[in-house]
Length: 404
Image 1 (cartoon, rainbow, N blue to C red):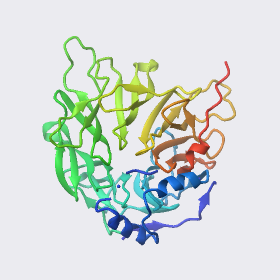
Image 2: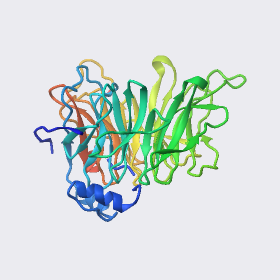
Image 3: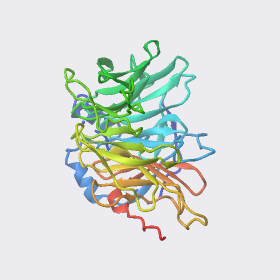
Image 4: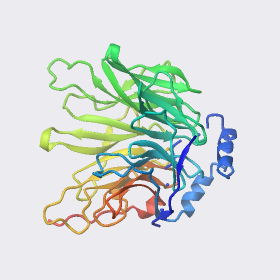
């Protein structure tokens, strides 16, 4: 039975859309009907964005899941994805437990007894959620729908990274016997194909899936090339067609830079970040690949930032969100959180989203076509809260450049 915890509604004044339906609007309609809604026309998302009110929606957390040492880099509680459309369904984790929300109300995913940590990583338009959980038998990839008595374990996988609106799921399995990680694609809960690594490279994770069936991931070079100092660590890409070969994304050099993909939109645009340099001189740069076979485009840092990453891109509108990192000289300025949720349209300066108070950090992990951003924010009681910024474009602002 689904565990449900109800708390007092707490909204400060502000939701992520992912991607289309396993069996079309018949399934989407039944899901929405369970929530007392009807399936809308696709154009409704644009109308919602046009009529939205800027606010920060603060979601409930599961009982006993407050993090005693909150940090924007050690993630225990967050909104990881928001379902497209009006369902108000969002998914993620609360205290490293798989959780989801309908509106502000939190629900625990019914995982097997004795399970440890886990999370829900994605959800599609019809309400199909996917994630992973640590059980007594090891890590398990799973799918789940609101109201089901238990999760459905996905055979042959220990992690799930994405689901599209046709119900296709991607993830991976660690094959210890052969010392490799295998990419897996499921359809209707059954393995459909293996995602082979490009020749000379080893997969370590899949990272995203779009409605066209294209997949992004990350890997390592198996052997250093003659004369090279480092193994290349590039992003990887799989076309939608099973007979098409996977490819290595640029740059695939031996500089020691580490490029990481995080998500792919419906046009094939991919976002992530690059860790460039070594030791104390290293820094992170938010990256966009406008085409899987195109160059990496490095986004600007937010004013005053010392690094930045992208974790998500909206399916159709090209908005990328992630984390901007900061450091401050003493004495610190009045409003000086160590990290802020960042928001980029693909041009112009990097913007940031407001927090729940001065010097309280924020982080963004999800963004929708209807202008919602999901993530986490520290509150005045030093608790990490799952949050959704509605009408985010009207809340995002350019930081004042630091004075010399």
